[in-house]
Image 1 (tube, rainbow, N blue to C red):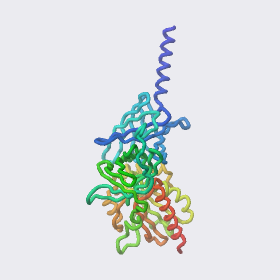
Image 2 (tube, rainbow, N blue to C red):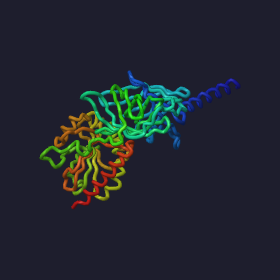
Image 3 (cartoon, one colour):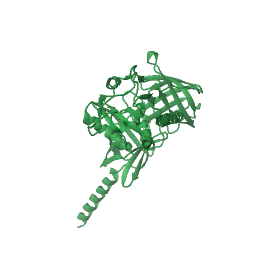
Image 4 (cartoon, helix red, strand yellow):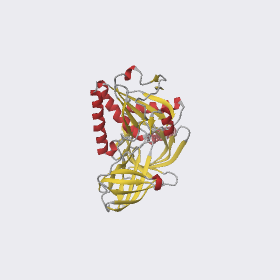
Length: 404
């Protein structure tokens, strides 16, 4: 009898231990991606218990990116990102996680080793060296060398050792960067579920950044309060002889949609040239969803033209549907059947000249004529640039709505 009771208690303890182990520990973690032949790329995330389920919140500066598809089985942990068709397959041991971060790219997968430490709030250094300078302000930055040089604008804010901000380019921004200035060494990173960015550099003095690396690309920067990019409305235009955009693409149900449809007649139309893989498109989509709710009743229509990593309808549909559900997108998303290669985009919309970036936003008046084309997107991580875009965009749409 005693032996039987002992065995029962033992199995009960093992069962309860298995249940306890199957949940992720709540609190803040430090995750580290280890790309091949590269420095480790750290980011922080928080695990929460909400309504009986666990959530992961990825932290990048002011952004909190919520992930709800978290499953555990014994010591195995499966985390699927709500966007970008990527996931983590991990094993939990005490206060540590280890395993793989997997990106599904349509025709292939990329696998990156990943580890994480529980109860760790620091990102790059637990005890960084006192910063030698303050990087707050606007910077003119140059990426690459020779004919591959690309001039960008850096916007940063520094409090103590902590540095946040981003780089803006003519095709978009690098979203929310967060990191550390330790002595004269700068480290910045971002992970949004689909893209992982790591920047390092030496700060030569209060006006100069040198020896920068972004992957294999070198970069430098000088402080410049008046640094600016070319006008985003001037880069992509219609070819001579064209006034309108024409297309016929299926929506997620397979029904063909074109600008000749009744829903677009006598409306101001915003076409979002986008892809579910695109981080700047994610920021623009978040903005357009709220914008649509406000302006649809005034006579504005929006449609997204999706250029995916594959021409396979079902695979593309799955990726785009994931974005639609994540943002609760109320306007139609169309599967173009063309890939995200810019030459493919140019082929599908032959009336466009100098297509450069995802997203590109085409603004059409009530007569169906293209009035403006905006290249890239300055997301909320760009601070004043984002505010400037929103104000200018909304003034433009208001003026088009006022036209007879």
